[in-house]
Length: 163
Image 1 (cartoon, rainbow, N blue to C red):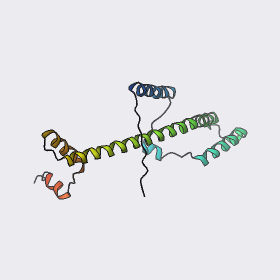
Image 2 (image 1 turned 180 degrees about the vertical axis):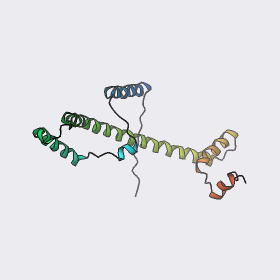
Image 3 (image 1 turned 90 degrees about the horizontal axis):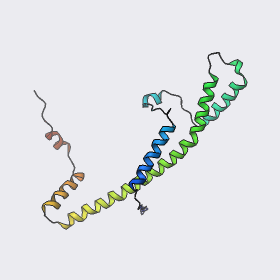
């Protein structure tokens, strides 16, 4: 089955890159409360998926209509603040997720094309079979990418432990 050839031919001017970085900095500035969780912190937290979002909304309605069933130390206002935040962040997260997907796909396609072109350059340089110092040195350097190191060679290259 033939592989689909997706081609990208684009460039990013330094001014554009700088404008994008400034826009991202502005987003950070407008979201000063963002946090950065560790993997362990995330693992220990409850997960809010689409099904749980509707559960949260229904539970909030129950809490608001029946405040007398809640213990005095339950902070309904804090729950409402959290719910408002997730409702406000949801469309932003969706927009950023779509953007990130396109950025990653473009990066992947450009990288694939650059790597394919690099392989062709390597093949042409090898086929030229010119023994000049510069080309030979460059070919050796490029060829290291494909050098296979056997486990026995790696073991003999490592120093023997002191007795």
